[in-house]
Length: 276
Image 1 (tube, helix red, strand yellow):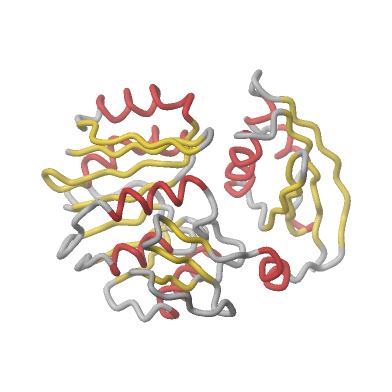
Image 2 (tube, rainbow, N blue to C red; image 1 turned 180 degrees about the horizontal axis):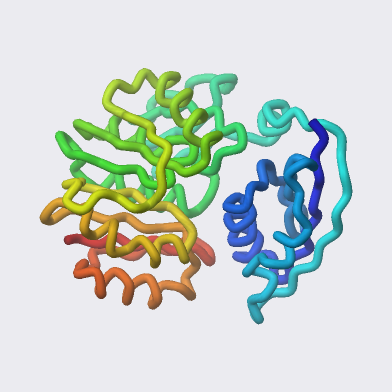
């Protein structure tokens, strides 16, 4: 299969490179390579549509300048590519996220093995790390948890390790669903169900915690549904948005009847926790 590479020059690079990557993932781009001045994004040539690039929201933001060039490249071995670049990640000395080919490194409380392929969520990104930090401070024993937009499934796996009785991991991308299922099996998890689906959770689903590390517009659009799917006193953990969007996120959460619990920031990225 041949691929088309789009080389984006982004100024300023942070946080816009990561925001752009999230948006490109939503429109079908399958692989990314960070560069000094932006990002290279890859999509099967048969699926490349120049009009999609013109409809992207990030280049239209007045706070950033984005230019790009396009060319076709030979078939790419994605597994070999990420194996060259993927390094183990630790969070607060308690969680280690590593690939299968990395050696075990005790004495971490929770060691998670991930083969990310093209799915988002290896622990490298600030938003994932903040989600992990917040989860470590929660009591999930015996709880019902939803990992919404699960990507690799790393948060769902951690939720089971922290004692959750039932975990539902959901993603709209079939590649992510397959990847999450493989990672769940690799980590010998028994209480996780991975489903293909969107963010329209069932009213009254009764989740004790919903983990939503998704882009800003989806979080705002889905806030009422997520709040309705929480059990009484249930927690909603949100990330995937930049600090400048904190007020928008807070208003959306409060309008949905949620109470603020916690805010975290790492670089330009933000996290917030809410309670029903």
